[in-house]
Length: 234
Image (tube, rainbow, N blue to C red; front, side):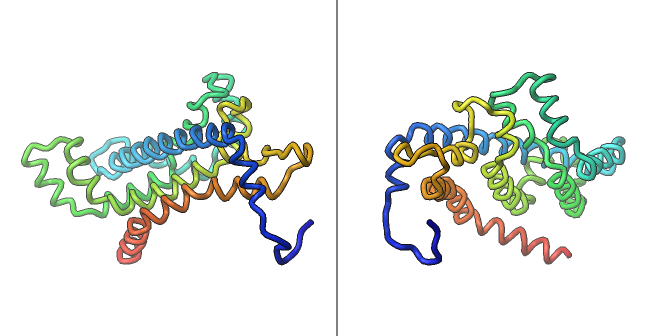
């Protein structure tokens, strides 16, 4: 049963979860792969698109910015996205289906566009006079200057992809491709039966939360510095 104070101390739940660790470690591998690739490509896409939209000499800046903003207000939703991924792209039960929704985040694009536009344009003009092209402008000037805000977005995006549950639940029906958040509710103890065992699920949740805590502790200085920079600019 449930009580406000623990009745006793036991490690049975952790022992059961780690007794047959194949399903947990497999889910860990899927989640880690999806999170790393989704975060990396998501930040890269948002940063590149934000840089393009921050350029005043880009002819399609207005229509493309409206398109990105429109997707924030009126998204397709779960059912149209599921139809596109499974029936049009035929990516069901694949890593690509889990990574695809995290490639472009409109909110990050608009924030980075504003951030890039606020940077001193004299530096960019001096670099262009020296012969730098747009790729060199971004990788040598824009990317280092936006490291704090990119670090903050990396933490937020990492946690968002790692904790994603609903989308993998509908597109990953095979157990070999299910991430950790989908596997956790299905943990069962054969000594108790088919009902969910909350102690086992909570033990798995603790093990699934450890990478999130590790990432946040390791990169919290980037997160705090980006918050300070945003506060000073406001």
